[in-house]
Length: 298
Image 1 (cartoon, helix red, strand yellow):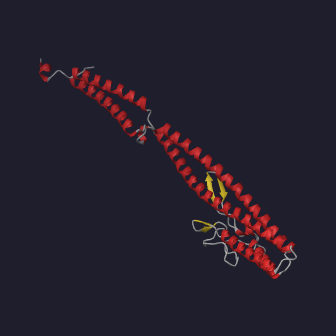
Image 2 (cartoon, rainbow, N blue to C red; image 1 turned 180 degrees about the vertical axis):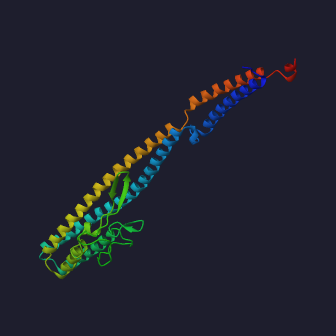
Image 3 (tube, rainbow, N blue to C red; image 1 turned 90 degrees about the horizontal axis):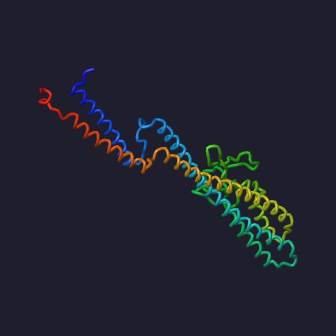
């Protein structure tokens, strides 16, 4: 096979281009900090990177859902805790009115006034909201769950069949309910907490026996405590999910770095080796293509 000067020059230039291309790739990696800049760099790595980024997007959305769920749970739990304390005060006043046969009209009036004020406070707590949505209103588009007279205006029915639970997805395979309707926490219309407390205030003011009201109030208290414990259990579940979500975000960030990020010391060393090789190739090529046309004619 005949080797011409042209073939030698072309081969040398091709080698230089390859070296220069490898050098440019290493410089690009150091500049961007990424091993993979385009699909052709590594189809497998790009596919893995896209999958991790998809998982990160889902995890970020789950984190937002968890944050929203925590807001609902905290608001609901705070409201129920305050209501339990106030209802217990109502019970103490009711017991006092039931057992003190010698109570004066002024005393009964004072108890009735306090119980009535506590009822108004309970209604206010029952209309607590998050971002304009009442936490005890169910899937309602309104701004409150109860009217001032204690009428239920949320979404649901007395037997619970019409309750539409509000849920948030907190992981790929898990959803959690974040709402507690007024029907579940305070009872159905006619036998709800506010009706019972209002009746106690009226009966105490009128000097009527409140023994029956006391039994109804105990039922309402038990229902309220059950709702509070249910909310607490959900809140604990959401808090656990928040920790799991945080751990998963960190794990995905580490996985993405392993796929995309450059190994800085290794890449710098490779760049130095490549620069040395390129300089050597330049020197060798300069020696190869030194002969001129005059040298060829000789």
